Image (cartoon, rainbow, N blue to C red; front, side):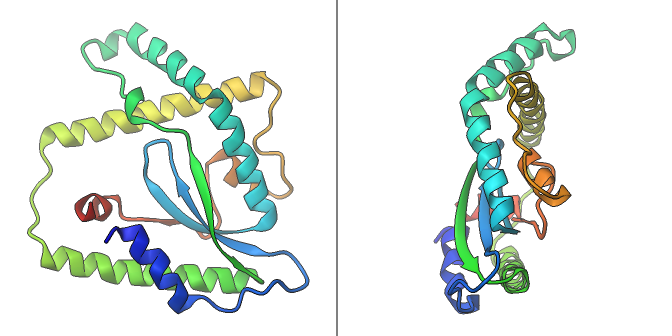
Length: 198
């Protein structure tokens, strides 16, 4: 069973009633980044809409940004002989997992999920033989992260030049979410454990 199937299965255990009440709804959201790393976070409906708008803009310009980043990468003498890992990147995607009637309920549910994930990680670590990552794998992961950062830079520039504003939302937190910089209550899932679980 994959880590995320397990997490979403456990949502039933920690989920309080999410019948919408007066006021803004809050969501638990799964975000898959450019480098395919998974993040689970809680946010308001307003912040979710800002993030959704940002992701739609990114998807529109993603391939052009990858092409421009690859061109810049190949033109840099420092990268001679090092392949550009653009083919390992994908546009960001988001999925709203659960609705809550208050920020407190969403944050509490997220904390419980983090706690359960931490315990699962610990069990997995104890039950499986650990080996050191090969140097080639470490190098490739580093190159993928570098490529993702370069593509993000190109993407932001293209969106800005086109007059798009992915961070067009009220409040600093919503702007950070839309920009992909920070998500309130964010929980980065252990990437190493996800790879082992596959």
